[in-house]
Amino acid sequence: MINTVILESILTCPSCGYSQKETLPSDACLWFYECQGCHTLLKPKSGDCCVFCSYGNVPCPPIQLQQTFGGHAVLMLDSAY
Image (tube, rainbow, N blue to C red):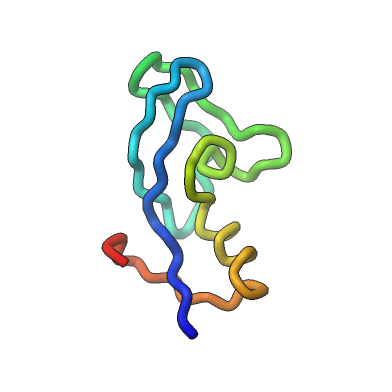
């Protein structure tokens, strides 16, 4: 069974509620993100590795891989999957 990693997430600003679909980096964590609605600089919550894990509807690829059958997954770089 092949599991894919989702490479798009909707970030929602905790300050103003603005939501934006963003592409997840496949090889790094994103620590800072400026909200396009209110320009608040989002930072990960304590214990989270990145803004996608804190404010996104999909966690970052490394966390997805950890959560998927003990880390056995295939990273699909085409976000259409």
